[in-house]
Amino acid sequence: MELCDRVLSAYSTSAGRGLPIGALTSQHFANLYLAPFDRYLLEELEVGGLVRYMDDVVVWGETSQRLRDVLRACEEFVEEGLRLEIKPNWQIQRTFRGLTLCGFRVFSRKLALSQRRRRRYRQARVSWESAYLSGAIDARTLQEAYAGVLAITTGAQSLAWRRGELARRPAVEV
Image 1 (cartoon, rainbow, N blue to C red):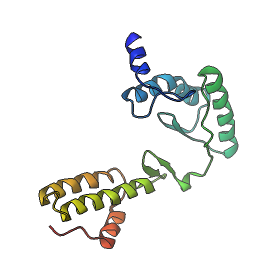
Image 2 (image 1 turned 90 degrees about the vertical axis):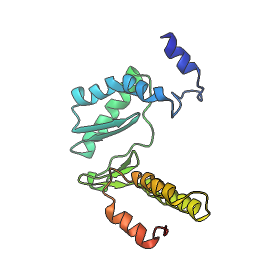
Image 3 (image 1 turned 30 degrees about the vertical axis):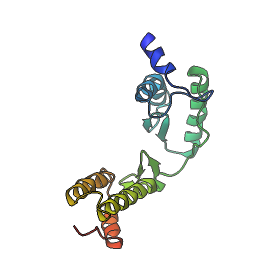
């Protein structure tokens, strides 16, 4: 407990806020602290599906009314049981619209890149290609950098999108 206290006191956050984003302990404590919430959703409320990353939660259900009931029950559970508040940006929508989660657009049968991740890919390409064209890096370093840029798209079904990007803005000649 003394070690936890030292780690937590090494950071400062605004009043009413938890651990700072980026602290290696934040994921651990989120999982530890919110595990009862996961069990509540799955065992007590018996939701149709659940994904949680840190404090971002996605719940599936059969009807909008059922999901509103789940939300009310969750608000009560986290306020009374965990002394937390549910973020105000919750929404109920149909699965076919997809959702943005962890840098991806998640659909029932497809994982696509989010707009932010697409922007990161473009910016990374421009940055590395500019460095090469200015002579700051050599061709080998550019090739290694391209592997890193490509890694931004890993996990998503993005081949057609990447081909379109290369057609609009071809890679520099080495």
